[in-house]
Length: 190
Image 1 (cartoon, rainbow, N blue to C red):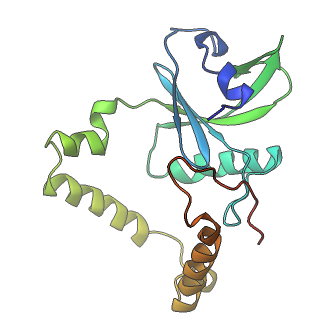
Image 2: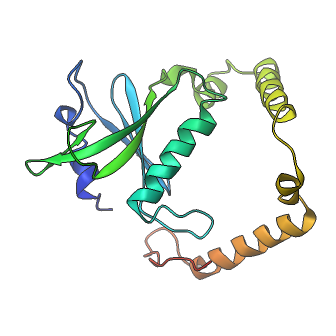
């Protein structure tokens, strides 16, 4: 898979603010590029529109970066630093550069991989007690969440059914595709 020139350019350690330089590792999801430096993680929204989310314009990606920081900081205090500009200079892209923003990224503190839940589970260091503490934090968070008729409407059987039906309709064109196949590139209509 060919990477966007912006992402390829950001794989250079020199594309980041002055400080301890080191290798840059790239991870991807269906909606984001995550660039890991020795001390920070930068998440760039891909310019996609899947119907249920729309990152198709720079303004929309900026807004969703800001929302990610606002919302996720509640459960990860001290991890989310903010939204930073990606700028272009002399044919290269730079994280937190000067000048006009060509793209935006969510900047986070990089957490040690050995503390990630998947690694702790694989190593046998996260059992029922750990899972219980995590569940308690999440339950407490939800118990204190805003509630009103508009929010409650998203949890009705009708709304859940509509979302499930929409998911099946959106994945229908991908039946029969997979490893070694080409995925259709198209926008899902709302």
